Amino acid sequence: MPLLPRRQPAALLLPARGFLEARVPWARDRALDHVVEREGHLVPFLLTKDALLVSAPPPHAVPLHSLPSTIPFPFRPLRFLQLYPSAFALSPHPIEVSPTQRLSTLHAAEAQTLDSTRPDAADRLLRLLMLAPSRALPLRLVARLRLDLGLAPDFTRSLLPHYPDYFALSPDGSVLELVCYRKDLAVSVLQSYAQRTGGYKVGDAVAFQLSFPRGFELDKKVRKWLDDWQRLPYISPYEDGSHLAPKSDITEKRTVAVLHEALSLTVGKKMEKEVLVKLGEVLRLPPGFRKVIARHPGIFYMSHKLRTQTVVLREAYRRQMLVDKHPMMGIRYQYLHLMHMGKEEAGKRKGKDRKVSRAEQMIGEDFGAEGADDENEEYDDEEDDDEVDDKGLEAGVVSEDEHSDDENTENVG
Image (cartoon, rainbow, N blue to C red; front, side):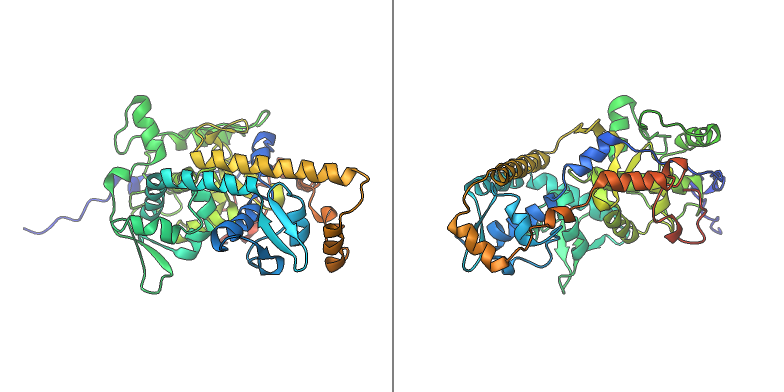
């Protein structure tokens, strides 16, 4: 008996793309901008801390010039370290940097938290690999995502060997590969929420949670399209989407689902857009997927703070507070408090007309006036945002890299 042609999944038969030729406006959300802005300097701070307390042997004193060149200092390293005397101690001839007792104590608390959350970190990293059609990710990209995922600085030694049934490194050590696909973990955050709040069956029309900043309005036609789009079947990001019609609403919804899940796997529920784009390319999202972020401002918020673009998952925050705070974020906030204390101490010393100590004189003699004007080199985000507003983002320009996407993609974002 001849075999009948295999019936295509229903999703493939859905009508093609129904986007309107309309621009979705961008509007500032000051609460979510604050979420991004308050972590300014946190990345170079943490990488410097790791260079001292993880990479360097006791007593963890490192010559200033020996700090890794990969640390993205916002200005001269000496000036950066001087901003945080509560965390970093400087000694002259040769100039060395070492951790203060407060920083060492907090680092020890972080190590305990990393140890206690290791199973959770392994599950989230495994799920990220499960999102990849190749079931593998470049180790370099995973290392770039380390802070977002809440992994230890030495995760290749402190995490991966504990889960040989989960992870394997390629022979050349450049690729992290999936060993075991766990079906019980192949449930997205959105599916899990739907199951808890009213039941869910595969193929149901699960809607994304939407929220907009005060005063934000969508065109009525765009709102109607969005309502119809929300009623489409939800295709899990862990399911194969290769059968879906390209440039269709259902493909758009699955792309949103993948980006939504990737952000949900981070401890801060946000990621620099540049990194998210690199991840999306590895996850083989359709061309032009970057515009999806801008087309759905009720799901994703694009912050322009800190001279970069950061994508924030809206539903994860109530104002500027995380709804579900991961233990690693609790540690992260303690580091931010330590940084703030250091800036206050530095400001008090700067405001006092006191005699400069011999040690500070020696540091100044070695470096001259280095860093004296570096505070002026720090960017003013308010000025940047005003500049963005003047260029008409409220009028509908959603993304700075809008025109750099695939030319075959409709210009609706």
